[in-house]
Image (tube, rainbow, N blue to C red; front, top):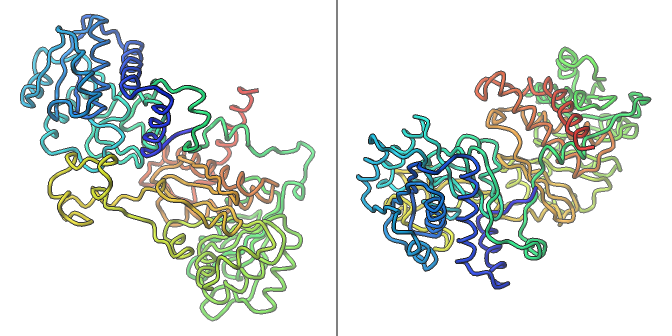
Length: 556
């Protein structure tokens, strides 16, 4: 599935304009397609329709939609929530409103319309578009709250491009009216794809802006996201005549006295991901605990160092290297301390040829060498790195950016969208700290993958997998119930198991992210996002495999 970021959408529009399609024509196409999508969903003839419009081009889209709905017989009122149109395109669209369309700029009157006996039977949200960030302006809060009350009373809401108050790149809701239908113009954005989009977007349909196949085909700003169709096409296959050896052998090097559960979670997840043979290399204490939770795993007992972790001594290194020779893939790092012993084991495994997943303590140990890039570049094996943003920062020295959204160029963010204190104060604003502390994973490149020749899976609410060629793909699967210690260990075990089964590194990372996220969705559906546990996730892998198999059969 292709999507664009907010900045990418501006580039796409410029590319289209460069072929002779004016911005006015794009607005006309957008408003017309929105009106068409609304009419397909709800009858409008004789229906009172309230169109909430901003002063920018999203408001202009609303004016065009209002014109077409009025022509279809709707009784349309346009509410100018931010004053008169401020762009040439929106002003031109406003001027074309037919005489029968009522117009009001008075916010108290709009509130009264929403609350009165003659309240609208359909609300259209065209206030803010993809450039919005932060919080809904305080002056508009009462109006939008009145619209939310109408929504709760059963009045449908349609949003043009995005529900106003939702950030296009992060899906963060700064006070929107949840929509029943969202018409995404030209292309879907991250906010349409995040796993919580259903809370505000409702059904998402693609609207037109006049984009031609030639422009779309030549555009280099598309981002790629995996979906259920991709998962079905790329699902791991199992031979009816296979045996445990032919289904992959995984060696898991994990565990520490303080974190025995990490090794358990990775080992169990690897076994549930379809690997035929999983061997846990860890200390005797961790091995005994793991045996109570995953009887199928084989334990390779290793000497411990003084703190209770795996020793990096010669005997252990020899045992690990011997086990690696008979494995098809290796996973290292879950629950390991990032000291000299872990570093020694990791460096030994980087010199062997089998695919290697590096996570957690092993990533921090790698970062601690001071020569992480050189070590990865010289690795004799395919490497998959699975850091969270903090580990990625330690690995690269580039902390995840938390930009002050109000310092961005005016064509990206308009300051009049925010409380005045947030515009004036430095990051973060003391009165509205959530406004300008968001992490946007789309506004940066993940160059270490190409520089080091590795596959990088950077975890987060949007998980990105970047290959050695620099190509990046995204997974929006999962939910915030994964924000608990141990979830990453499960993911490492999954990817290790898929690598052992013969999947290529990028595919294993992507399918692993999908399996992990979909299992989380199913788990949250039964146990809630609050109460779900990482240890429950492997129990849902089977349902995800079955769903992918069924989807594959439907596609055949």
